[in-house]
Image 1 (tube, rainbow, N blue to C red):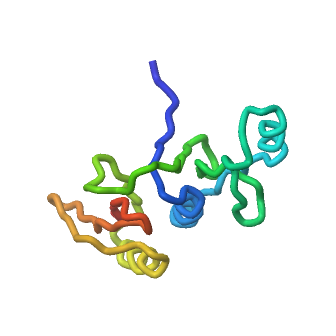
Image 2 (cartoon, rainbow, N blue to C red):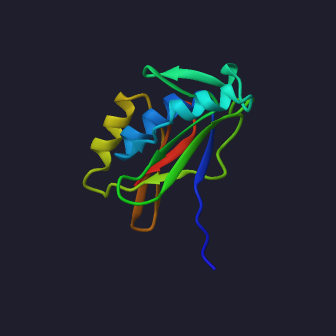
Image 3 (cartoon, rainbow, N blue to C red):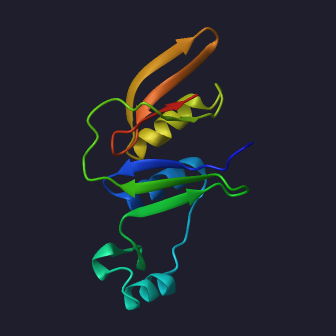
Length: 140
């Protein structure tokens, strides 16, 4: 049996992370329904303290998601109470190909990513970087 899944990433600022990764991957930030959020508050299922305004829109404070433009792939960024303290056990690989790797590393560095190291295994090589919150990812 095959299961549907999403990747969830703990974040200090899930909305900023969703914006950064959506632009990085060419995906879109999933819209949140302000009317639904307001109805949850009005019905007592949520409080205004659980919301924030991002780019002028009412959103849930604790999370933001991005979606692939042509399928159901989804990454959720959710608030975590603690900050990142060690190396990721899971990371994303941004696969752009050998001929585009250096330009992509430069583009991501200009947008707030940090170069960490270069790696190679046999004929395969990659650059390990960190996103603006310090989460490692590879550009391959």
